[in-house]
Image (cartoon, rainbow, N blue to C red):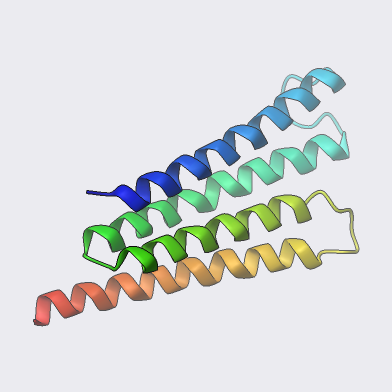
Length: 132
């Protein structure tokens, strides 16, 4: 059963919906039906939502695989929490105008580190099961 993954996926879904509502609100405020209409705040909201949608599915899949492969619950949970933190920091940082990219870069580093770690953990867990 994917108990830990289910909780992680639910939290990430709530964050995604919140990011989506921010885009919708800015589209209504600026009367923009498609794209950003040249509004920087809307462009940032669109990219925060888009970046989330681009990276989170890979993380959830890898977390689910780790749990299905028999990874300990605490490792699965820690991976999920780290992914959540990375995506939240990135979403917050993308709203800070240049030249301060520090939070955005930190969020990206945490996200990429989590994804790479999850990929390695899954490969190791699979190899261990295959080789006994």
